[in-house]
Length: 327
Image (cartoon, rainbow, N blue to C red; front, side, top):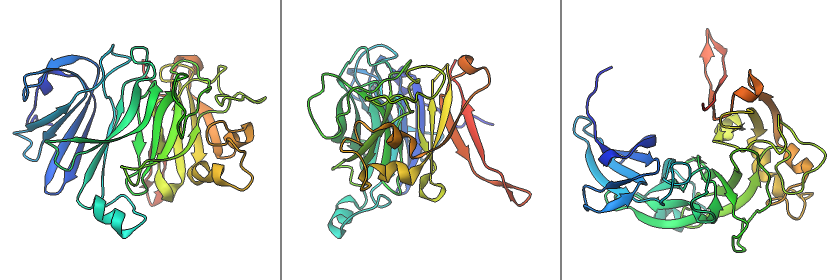
């Protein structure tokens, strides 16, 4: 391995780097931890958010822009996750929608971080139009007045997004408002949206581990009650039809495997309860579940990330799930 190039990022520490091909350029999106630094382009002091660089010529990266984030401590600020989708890959419901998105690129980022203590009810997930990466434009706030936002996942070929968050008890009434969920540790569950048209988010449902729903039934799964919060869901997409959900971060780990299609369509079924999307019944929580497991060491390991690896060895399928804990 040889170092080819580097950038100081103005001294901002980075949680997640993402490199995307946009046209004939490669653009890097650096999702930062909390902090404050001087923006070299504006000479202004800015709270850490998202840095954008042109890394087409990797030996000579060009710093294009910095999108500031919210202020606060390490566990409550910054913009640690970034996903970018092309408007030409995202599906469209009409020729007019496809034409409007043609040639555009969209950045989905978490706005705030896991504890939410510094910005209660002020965190969110945001979408920026980054077609011109040097001049990002805020397009929409997917879900405002959240707490505990963190790792998101966005399927570019379907538009489905799995957003980690919790609704603030002080949030104003709005579509998708789902207060009353219960989580130990990181106070987070999943809010699912269809973001195929980034300017017009469509709420689908909230979801988590059995025992986290507002009206808890007689089943509470996992090692503690209420079950530990989620960290970062990863979808294997339509073909594999699975979503992997790790809970616990650094302790009391549980990894849940769910049927993606049943998860997405469950609350539109004819027999779905009236409040399935925001306050599902125990059966509606169990329906998409295909299994769950704990990690060796039980309380000593957490479910930080569960990454599926699909492949083959000697001509035979060999599918793995890589699970890591956070110390």
